[in-house]
Amino acid sequence: MVEKTKLMEQELKIPTSDDKYIYGKLRGGFESPLVIFVHGLGGLMDQHIYYNGSRYLEKHGVSSFRFNLYGWEKDARNLSECTLETHAFDLDRIVEFFRGRGIKKVFVIGHSFGAPTILLSQKKDFEGVILWDPSLGEPMSFNDAKYVKSLDMYKLRWNFELLIGKMMIEGSKSFQKREEEAIRKIKVPIKIITAGKGHLVAEGKRYFDLANKPKERVIIEKAGHLFDEDGVENILFKETLDWVKKYSN
Image 1 (cartoon, rainbow, N blue to C red):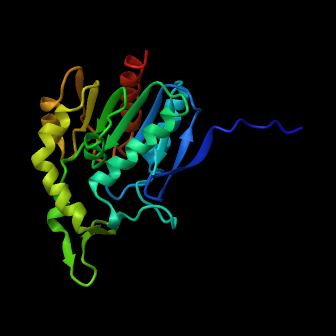
Image 2: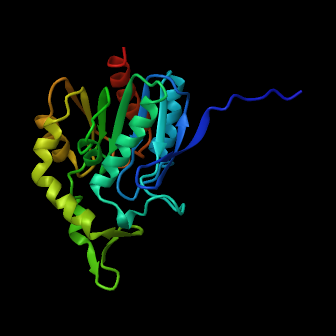
Image 3: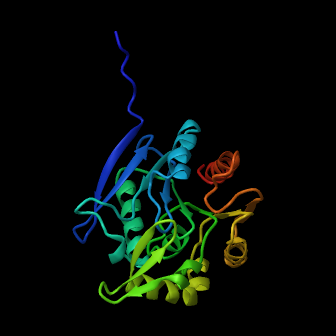
């Protein structure tokens, strides 16, 4: 007889008010506390820090939801049509979805470009914030984006190419002028975890200096921006879990 295994992960499709759908994966159950992962620019929900992070949290009694801000599905958003405000709008919709299912404690994690998404949330309906190596509203690489007239979009080349809409570029530049105001509007506990070997150390310190208390800043000295060095993930996850546990009672 084969013993049935308990389903640990559910695929969810959350509707928005503008006829789009947010695709994501719930790890654990509809219980509190819940952590919502917000990926960075060009990221996906199944990158190692979200995939492995969701499993780490589940082992310690914390549920998580990771999702794509844009995707290949016909009714999902396209990155080229998104703005930071679009991302923030969808994050608020996700929180609303889980609140409607009885979740009492919600924490949000933003990696890199996911940080401005959280800061621009209109409702800010969460109990705590953790920022993983947060970037400013305009990643430095936006300076290298090339305008493609035939597409009326910008092309950004990393180790892959991204098409970025003009509204994203302009909105990101505009966010820098509103950055201080945005972070001061966060009234819940905030923890900033900086990659010591990354290029965003100064941005992490700036966010921390502007943030309201209670706040905490941790630098993982041997970590790069993607936290993919040997042993770094476990440090990142433990620091994250400690903050969630501290403020989920």
